[in-house]
Image (cartoon, rainbow, N blue to C red):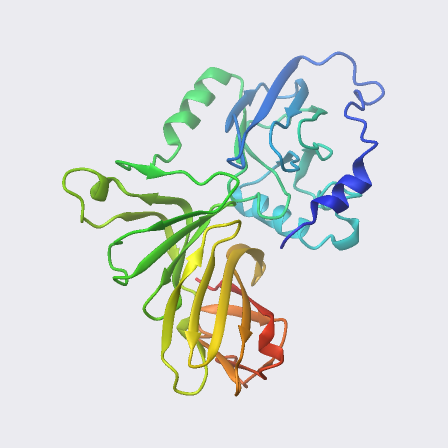
Length: 357
């Protein structure tokens, strides 16, 4: 899901950052300042702790160029992801409700913090000890902008426990994706020889096979460890740093019996892959797509195609057992294993894919 920033700016130019505590709240017992890591789509603190039942003032400082919010949830990761998924379904009410859906699991939430702005949240901590997830529910943010608020009588012990349980990425030379896509040509373990790896903001990445001219697979999480190639004499395989997911590809686009011929790529903005199928010229961009698959919030991919000079039908093929697919044009066959588009429809269309696994 993509959001248009100009729409936000028009709607929220007269933004009032501080609403103040609710009537009767009184003075807070605890004040927390939570920031954002510029360009990384992460909170600057991913573990917090307070005592049960205390009055909390949380100040969210948005130092990024994107919009953010803060939502505290009771339950676990499943509840956090359900709330984040429901935020995607708010439609025209998204901005009015600050991307916070109605859900019994929501304990507290902020208004949207505009770039460079600060918002405050006042709430009473739960009386029950435990770990409470927090998240930014803006589209595409919920996979990396997460953290845990520990409610415990011994806050230091709770913080120590959470810090020890945080997963660590073991990498010799990790490449970091910030607020812009990152493209890296690399030899990758168990992957095609002509691999082009692209990391996207929002914690999803993909590998494009320049031989087959199609996306081979995606992965969620950190991007790429190029240490094995950069250290020593080079030529060794790099490693992906996240959890791989399949994209259902069977060679992707087809036009008759034409063999794909890769013609290069552009690094400007969203990377654009260019190739030919016979006389037809193909441009493909890939971006983050988030949505619900069987009620579960998932990260997937959106393909944006432009096909020119096609003189017959354009067909996109995939494995429907691996992905849930939707398209902006064309006609699917009965089991959604192939999409057929006329040359006119193929001039510009999108396909969204959500992994089932």
